[in-house]
View 1: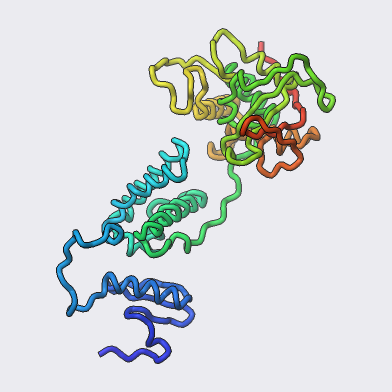
View 2 (view 1 turned 90 degrees about the horizontal axis):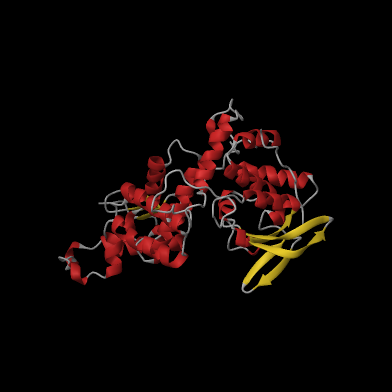
Length: 392
């Protein structure tokens, strides 16, 4: 016969106990324990819902007809992997992610299903969260570790919303601090060393990034018809302006500051003029692929458009040929993205405010123009004007 409960805890449901500083803990029917925190009312509510499902007195039990169980209750008692299909459907419909973002999410959800997909949603707890992290993030960076926590938080939020889970245990998991940046910055001298041995299309991409402060995704998307040429050049801040280049930064595309109009100065105009060759292309950065297939890359809209991943890979290739930071591990050597960092540094050093130009969301001293339903931030004229001599 079990020992009688303390008087002040006699109102607790079966299986729920108070353990001093540890708070409320709950014993399940398989004799495993779960911490329910220090909030009494919440612990009681969770315990009662669990008992109503799993602790039924033998006197009133009966064989259950599956057709009589509600669909919501079924989802909570069936393997979690079966519910994850609905998570993917809701995520795509409600959050409207890009094709690449959705593909990455699908991949992570499938990995999640492999690790804890055989468990019913109602019993997934913090122990399972830790099991996922030990399986999928062990030995990897803190960024990867935190990313898996974010994935579980999102997935479990949908599950709680659909009554498949009682709570979201991933929200109770402590994240790790991000490590300091591993990749080294690129210097102007190193930039020039890479530029000298790079093919024309890569030089164009590098120069465009340096003069605009934008990264591979935006540089590869710049088209000639994104430029509004003026009938006659005008002078802004003592600099001759020939037109305006529109760039929509995708990383912060929902923010007002993501659409920028960059004045086309003499330096930027020369980059655009030099990019024109015997290849018919709508894109400023372009090349004719060595192997022509019927299938255009998923990152491109035209055969001559440069794939941003190809751009980054080729930049790293010529970086190594130039011997830039060769004493460092490859994970620490600068990538194409560091050209953006160099550009921001050079603009700042030249006395320009680079925030608006780079489409940073915290830019304040910029003027917003409306065109239709889109807002474009016109940035002040400025140029670095660095052109590396072409080797003879």
